[in-house]
Picture 1 (cartoon, rainbow, N blue to C red):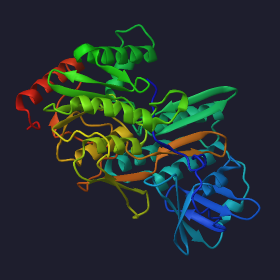
Picture 2 (cartoon, helix red, strand yellow; picture 1 turned 120 degrees about the horizontal axis):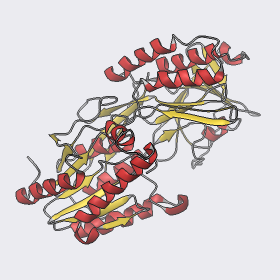
Picture 3 (tube, helix red, strand yellow; picture 1 turned 45 degrees about the vertical axis):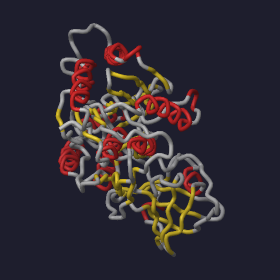
Picture 4 (tube, helix red, strand yellow; picture 1 turned 60 degrees about the horizontal axis):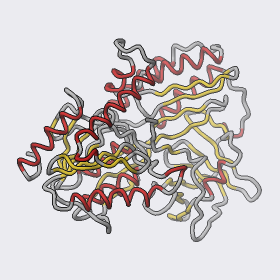
Amino acid sequence: MPSLRHVVALSILPLTLGAAPVTPTGLWRAEGYGQVLAVTGDRSVLYHVAGPYCYPDPNADAAQAILAQEVTTLGPDRIAFSDGPGQTRYVYRRIATLPATCRTTRRWSGGDITRLVAATFADLYPRTSVRERHRRQLGARLATIPVDTASTDLFDRLADALDTLDDAHVSLSATIDGQERSIESGEAPTLRAVRHDPASGADPAARERAWNDRYRNGITGLLAGGGHLVAHRRILWGRIGRIGYINVLTMGGFAEAGGDDLPVLDAALDAALADFRDLPGVIVDVSNNRGGYDSIGLRIAGRFAARAAGAYAKAPVGSTAWQPFRVEPSPRIRYTGPVALLTSDITVSAGDTFTLAMRALPNVRHVGARTRGALSDQLVKPLPNGWTMTLPAETYRAANGRYYEGSGIPPADPVAPFLPDHTTVLARLAARMAAAASPIS
């Protein structure tokens, strides 16, 4: 199953025109995200800044893509861009002059790229204790890379250093001598064990596909009549005895061929929750959820909400301007009885934030294993040598005031979700809920 994560690349966000387009001529520095926007009548430029470094985005249309979004004026010297109501707001503050380093053309050596990577993480990486400890380890590793390292060796050395972060939202990609290279950090321990099982002769990707097949087939074998696999095979629902069951594999990608996800999602949830209406409990399983979009997670959580609840707040690193997000009860079919939310170390990104949203509801009991703990959106940083890096650059604060970036969200009721196997775990959980006919205690 392909990974689907919420990626934030301010230079390539969808173009959504606001009702009252604004052209904010001047110089604007983002609050967080390491960006400067230079807006003129003839040509606008997006710059990336980190520590003493500044360089223009290689995409000549990057600035215009930002300017084409919905714009909100927050004051004479502050504006915000967003992809629509309820979406993340990216706030920019007016500055008087363009930093001198942005006006300097330079040739980027391997040493410069290494120091730029270190400066980017120093400026933008989340400050939670786990992330900060790993960032210091990254800095130490980067400091050992020779300044004259050639491109191929530089990629390998940077990849090895970034991998020490154990962060699912960190990646590096490049085309070197005509060959595409890429790495992603932070593989879930469960998937790492699956992909690198020496007892299997298949390649790692094939091992994971086989594991996913066993996971899904085990569930369909447990559900009455095999259940219903819908929404581009990303939602599986049915009944386990007297208990409803719904498994959401990604927070997005529900429509075929890039169509509109929301009607497909709504239809799937309508059918499932109509069937669950009179049942004494429901299991919402995101133990194999690979992420997607926070807004999708909030929309699903609204199907289990009796009333509105604060889900979480987020802010870019270096800013105290927290943006709150709430779970709002859906106007469509809802289930507000006892719910068990099942997570694992695979549950990541928008799966993490969905977990926060569901935990804010009084009828939901969080069971399973600690989530992966990669909550921040994945910020895309094009590097001046043509490579691309991603990293998290935000902090999420749960409704209880706690921070789970890097550490994962611990369940109230710890259960190993895949031991001895997932089907057995689900059968036991459903039996407990049916016997209690009330929230798990």
